[in-house]
Length: 121
Image (tube, rainbow, N blue to C red; front, side, top):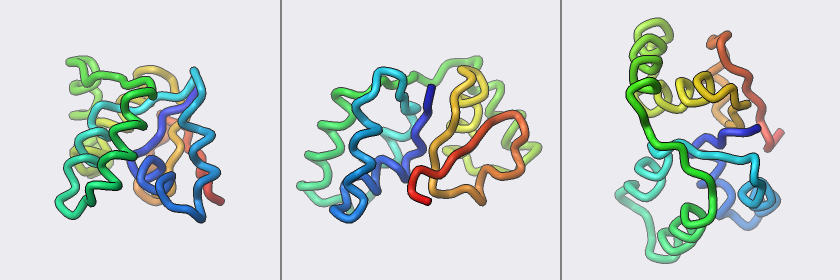
């Protein structure tokens, strides 16, 4: 089972990376609720992008941020010096034993508690 990082959702909107859209259709594919905030909350988002991303979030499995995830994110943020968003995403992957698909391998490479994969490379 897979957890998509926010960047994979963003890249799926690009024509040259449209193959990523296939990932969005699987029943075993999830995103963290924080990704919805990161993607739709971007201050330079266009109305066309917003429409596309809203359609993605209307069909993909979203994991809500729970107290369990927050507690794990706090630990990971302290240990690995992660951003708030990355710590929540990493904690979600760990809590649900999901493989994190990301193009930002550098951000997560030191976290031994999770598996990461780059679907672009």
